[in-house]
Length: 193
Image (tube, rainbow, N blue to C red; front, side):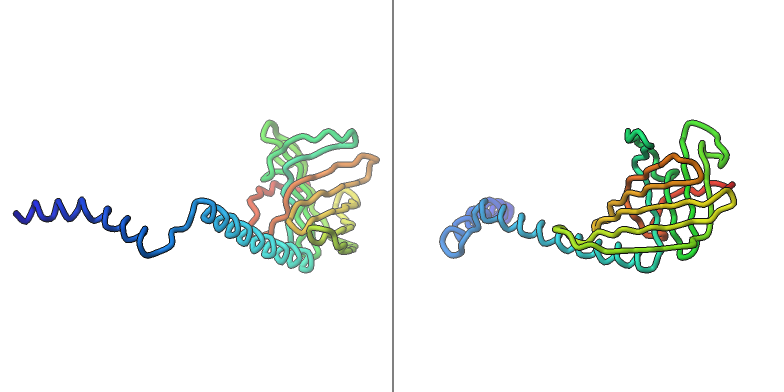
């Protein structure tokens, strides 16, 4: 007898719950739920963007960041997708590392390219207010064992970055990717020349 009572109660419980919702409380429509979810996503996105702006500003003011390149291009302008863990520029206070690498070969650095370390001799930074935040223009001069390098960065407040690298020759190498704090970087630094 008790089992029948529990089965009947188990079946009627959802029906009573629906009846109560219709009688007493307001039920939120699907449209209202969608709008509420959209507002929540927008608020989360705005908070993430504000936090990223603070992180980017902190990295630049402390002069400690890594540009992990997703693309590299030369003077012709064609962008080549690359591995960001092997292609990067590190700025660490007064020192810098420039690396170009490939998974398909052995180069001077052991990862199919070249790695150059040097001291920063000049660091100039300017901020520009734009519609979606602030952009940074940074010019850096690096003195290394094999020559002098001039790097010009353009960095958005969201962390997207481009760098134009000029060395002893007339060529230009452009890195495009994301700015990352040094402690969060996933790079593999090979041996330097």
